[in-house]
Image 1: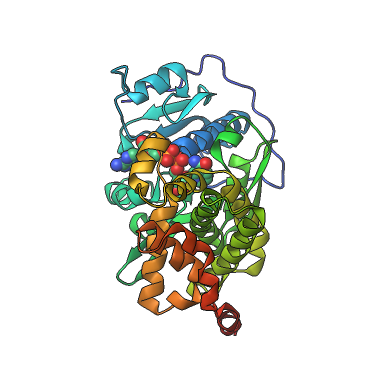
Image 2: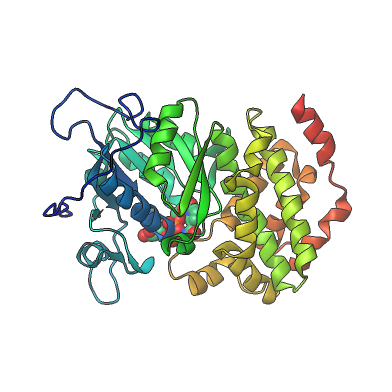
Length: 395
Ligand SMILES: NC(=O)c1ccc[n+]([C@@H]2O[C@H](COP(=O)([O-])OP(=O)(O)OC[C@H]3O[C@@H](n4cnc5c(N)ncnc54)[C@H](O)[C@@H]3O)[C@@H](O)[C@H]2O)c1
């Protein structure tokens, strides 16, 4: 079991502002004495972004009265080449040496390899693992989380089931019986780790106070978070932009230049919006102008691992598989765009929408080797009829 946070020198916490923190805005305020009213946060996941999220949260937990100092972080246990366990090294050095080397997480982050133990006392659960592991994680957590817990998902991706696509926030809500918000944005983890300014968007369902609580937990001077009442719109932005990033990587690998890349980004954003609105009529146009929308498309198409590996794929003429390149280039980190492109393709073919989304469809066809990387700029001849479809979605 993971150790408890040593509170030898408790920090002096800031008084919180009345607008974002009063007795109405704190989740699960009780009439207890002592610290019982304070929220306990657990981060489920500890990869590159998971570790940065834990760092942001840990710094705020120390400052804000409404949170317990200790932040638990569930770590998928791994043996390091040194023969030590990853959790032991994180708890000794305060660093995730595998997924975020060189960055101190905060002494109040406690790595815990036991997922049930990590979540059992938390009333604020932050999910941040590669999306392909979430079904298994949810299955393990059924009946193990507090009934009054609130969740937020930082996960970009979706599951496709027989009945149709299932967003990860929905999977969490349905399996665990708790409300789930989302946080997405133009957030390359390594840049936020070194405290370079960026923005993010919290998508919430209907409780603005809960959204404010999440905003408070994540916001720092270099990380500006805005709430938007559009869970599906925010989450689909975060998910679909990885497919656009793969397309941008192909363009880079083929040395096609900036105009072509800008065209791919614009067409991709348009397909993102149309696809999201066809799936959920509640999705708002304005969401695509938030950090989770256009800003995330730009940052992932300029930097980011999906773009990088897709560039290598195109440079190799599609002869080396994404699995092989991922293993070689990402040191245990996971690509999301290739599996999301497959999941989107399944939805498109199942619903007869393939011709309406030529960029999304072509990305998948290239990833699986049915088309060469150069096909990324040929699909436009297929005359997409998105405008007709967007009109019908509007009515
Ligand atoms: N890295 C970024 O810049 C970034 C930014 C925004 C959002 N995201 C999103 O955050 C999510 C998590 O990404 P990340 O960057 O933290 O992870 P990562 O790709 O850096 O690391 C992979 C993680 O998966 C864990 N893992 C491996 N096998 C597992 C298994 N069988 N079960 C459970 N976990 C297992 C590893 O221990 C590691 O923690 C993804 O959805 C990603 O799209 C990432």
